[in-house]
Image 1: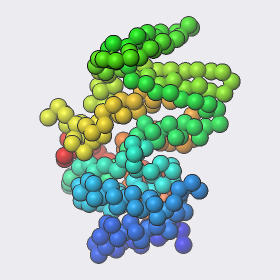
Image 2: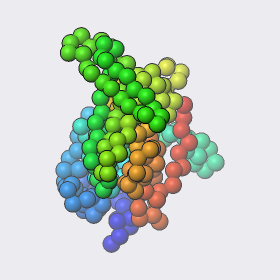
Image 3: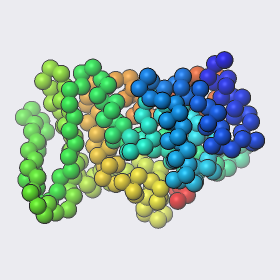
Length: 269
């Protein structure tokens, strides 16, 4: 039986089955989506842990949670240890001609997950990411004679001032990107759906609140990826990052699912 048909049957019974039970019943289907280096039982345990840590996920539609989990499975990026996240959002959906607010789960890539995807590219050699502090010796320039020079202070490094990522590719190419703390956080406030403009802060469950340095590193890494030779995996993951996907019965690949969400300006903490 095809994966989507099994999901269709499971989702049809969602009113009678709890979300944890539905996840556990999807082990075989998750196993078909996973690459060889990951285990379906382990991914299910991680998903159940996510539900315990963030109870708001229990309120999400089963479709959105399973869609996010299958996206994690297909990419081979576990939602743990900063690799990726499963987050709840309040989305507006038009149902029977009326806009309604529905809580849905969203897959969010972390910078460690993006690094994993980088190393899967045949041209990848090495990647380095660093945080720059005000008392460090630091200078850089773009252009025909681009360079970056960073000598961390041995003690009392001061406040965080920025982040950079350097990628080394086979053939000798070395490419870097730098972003100031202000630019990186500003990018998050502009593009992350976890930022509440009314309260001028990120939601409590957002990694932008709990792990701001990690999210800043991810932001500069994405800027670097834009000028690197990208694998299909990285292109896809950047394309779906910070979007919500919905499982439909007529689609076999989670990456082919249409993005139909109209985001609210705020999300529930």
